[in-house]
Structure formats: C-alpha cells, structure tokens
Length: 210
Image (cartoon, rainbow, N blue to C red; front, side, top):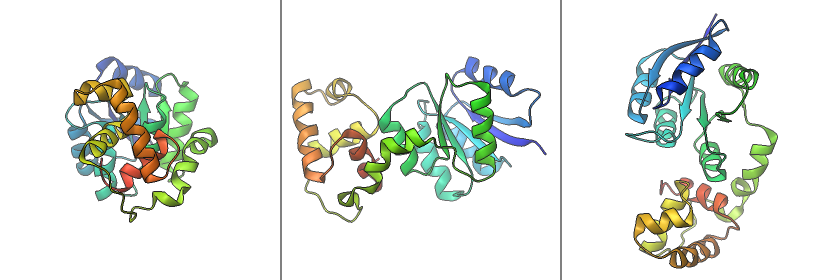
C-alpha cells in the first residue's frame, strides 16, 4: 500500500520537484499546501500517513503548523524540510515532536528513507542532528517549571532568537542596535542557565514562548 503524504511548501517549483522525485515509488502525494494554515487544515481533515513540511511559509510557519498538528494528531509523523541547516530550527523541531529534519539538498534515497521510516512511526533523526540538541534537551535548568525573571525586552529577544533569527535580524525586527541584542542574548543565556542559542530555543519552546 502506498504511503500517502501531504507536501507543505509555498514554492510551486519545490512541490513539483518533490512529486517528480516521488513518482513511481511507494510514496503517493495526496495533498499539497502552500501555507502553514493550509497544512494544518489538510492534516486534520485528510487521510495522510506523513506530512512533509517546509519551515518558512506565509500564514503560519512550518514550525507553528507542526506544533498545532501534534496537539490534535500526536501520532501523525511530520518531517521538516528546509533550505536552512539552522540549529535553532532543528532544536525547535525536536522539541515540537517532528519525526526528522531534511535539507532540500538531500538525495532521493535520503528523502524516501526518511518518509518510509517516519511512516512506520520511527524516528528519522540522524545521530549528528540529535547530538547537536541533546545537550539542550538534557540541561536540568531547561525544566519548564523553572521561573526565570526575564525583562520584557529579553523575552522579546528570546522569542525572536527561538524563531531562528540572527542577532542582526533581531536588531532590525526590534529596532534596536546589534550591540544591544548581543548584550541581551548574553544576559538571557546566563539567566536561564544554558550555554548557547540552541539550548535557549528549546527552553523557549518548553516555556511556550513560541
């Protein structure tokens, strides 16, 4: 029986390319979405075995859509597919329950293997990917019940950081200087007791800040 997948990506060329790659295999594309909102709607209403989800999309990014799908259908495997080898995206994907994280430059075999693995209800995460976030997931101070006195501005910076923005992008988004952002990030890491941005992103997800 074919593995039914939903492809969620706002670029038609990517969706068409994926369908071409998956033609004549045991994977059947049964639905397509161009926004996070559509992806959630289709995943909730149509019989699919695996969701292949882009991260940067309009009307609700892929990570937000992943979180919403997992709330209602925790057993539905969702594979994240991204152009960005971004440790923060990877950390949030792990924390939100994705079955794996694929880069758009992956081979046909890597794609098929990940889809088949996810369809069986197994993890398609590679050892290297998990190693990058294991420290974040295991850090004792990351417990969601730890109360940390972040200022309003620090909370805003942390939220942007968890969305995968660089310090420069955060500075532009919040209309503050790059140096100020760097200072806020250092304070945040020290306050929540973690050593890097990836761990901070996981902490933010567990505190439901993003």
